[in-house]
Length: 233
Image (cartoon, rainbow, N blue to C red; front, side, top):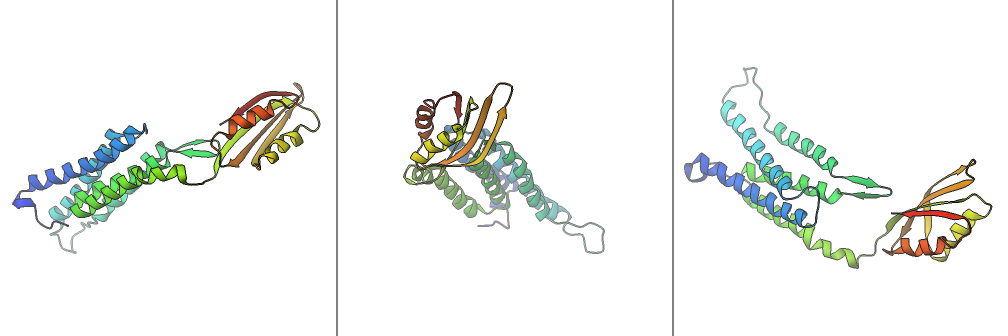
């Protein structure tokens, strides 16, 4: 519930409770991220939550301190501006934990959790204790319980396969035949020929569902005549 008055008439107690609740919310989410080895862990999430809470409290304080000025003054206040800048600032932090490796992107969940933790801090900073508590529970459910659905969900996976081989006629067709025998489809094909070394470099992104298809493809492709290097990730 949003508190229009301070707790027990004590502003220090009110601020302490808000900050402690924000730290607790950020801490429990950060602990889950830390446990799974994510780059934004316990300390990062806790700092984001506490920082957002402090900014919301300061935003309220501006209004309480200067809100008595009438419209004839040149002073204009908009408490929502601080909240808007928090969201923008967290976007920069979130971008720092997102990594792109070939066709795969890592760190989106961590970036989203930072964005959510900032919201938790803002909620506690505004005094929406029930909102902050419910949102904290939902964030933890999404990070823990929903993660258990991954093994049972059939979803496309992407494998980047790169092959270096002697440049000869029919090589690409043989590579495509290996994929076709496994009902795999290549996309984003990139290839070039080194005329000096007489080598062909062939790279593609493969959509597949099996987790260990890379090893199986390597075993099949290495038997093709002229293959020099095979790399996948």
